[in-house]
Amino acid sequence: AAGKTLRASSSNGASVASNANDGNRASYWASRENELPQWIEADLGSSVGVDRVVLRLPDGWAARSQTLKLQGSTNGTEFTDLTASKDYRFDAAGGQSATISFDATTTRYVRVLVTANSGS
Image (cartoon, helix red, strand yellow):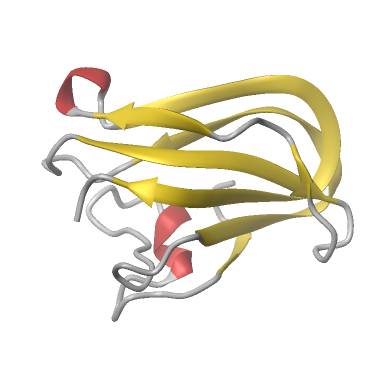
């Protein structure tokens, strides 16, 4: 969702939602600490076909697991689950990334809903 409008449930200091797709791996979105669940969503501008999301954390971060699921919406208000909630591992060996594939759907908004995080 490079260059698309992002919104989030919260942010922590300068780690605002728009950092998540600015192309700079050193900048990132962070929610308020110790307050879960949290979410970040992309407005794709119009309904388009989507079948995967790639999440990348900054290089150099300690290994962690995050429990999350993906949701989609055509109106930005009512969301349905695109995936079940699952633990994803982020570490240097995996390039600090996770590719989440799911059945193709048409949606305008894609939300990442995080319910647990083993990192700080």
